[in-house]
Length: 441
Image (cartoon, rainbow, N blue to C red; front, side, top):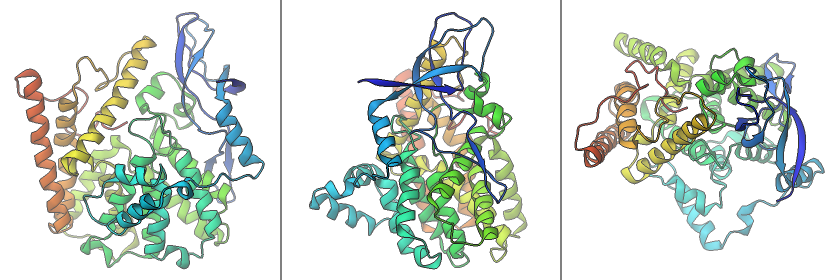
């Protein structure tokens, strides 16, 4: 396919001259500061960050994030972007679906609150529009469109931006994952212990954060961005790099779409800040911080859901649970997610090997098996969090179901590892009990 060559700042350079390197591209220094004072990242050509094969002429010892490189932009994406710039909005692919498929999708939405909801099937039935379709439905179910007087055109524009800026080439961190997390969040918002206290703003924030929590994820983790001295790592000072990018990208899309432009400025600022607090909570490196605090509240029995700050903290925990709930799903769904996330790990490892970088923990396909990775993830990350969530919900039916699936899935992976090696699996490297390991990038 013919390509356009576009100048852009931001690249990774390596010591070996004339080496082909797959680099993570970034939208230069394109940031906007609105009247609210929250930095947002300006949307450029689709998508923000992508893995591209670049031929770089490298200076010895230099890892230059300011060096100009040529970025490949496919003609198809250029044409898509130019159509949008000319105000020509492509027809939603939902209109092209067979009526039988639409009927099945509508039927699935009637059961969107059940834990065995198959997001992969729903994504196929909606022709890859699972996130937009799900969010529109949930906003309507919860009465958020009426409550916040949202413009439907602006809402569709915003949701389309969010879905579009997930990278479909990522095996795991894509729009289907975002839809899956949003569906899980919906289930948690319905928990009897929590539901009676939630305000429309709480629900709006919970669903929005779930939908956008990984937007524009590059398919590599924070340590990779740091060790390659990527622009994002520098921008966010090596702290919650991806989560900060997800949040500020979301703020940029909110402003570009004008979804909240009719609301008072102080309310818009509050929404943007609370979205940031929720999305930043998904940083896996902060797992122990949130888990310890959650345990302390439960041990003291001082969670007051009539207090807005306490509700916000519980929403943070709920989003963290939704983000890593795959091992708590039915085996067939859980297995697919496990294989997808490990495939993304392995791709990063292959990239690191090709670029002569140290391979990150869990990313070496030759030594890190899917069962070992999943057993460690369940044991040290998922189980501790969901045990406390079950305690918070007073052992609800949903919590019991999730814990049951979790234990069964862990046993499935144990059997699979034994079939591979004949030994009982041990702790994988980089998956420490404190949650400081790689986890999900």
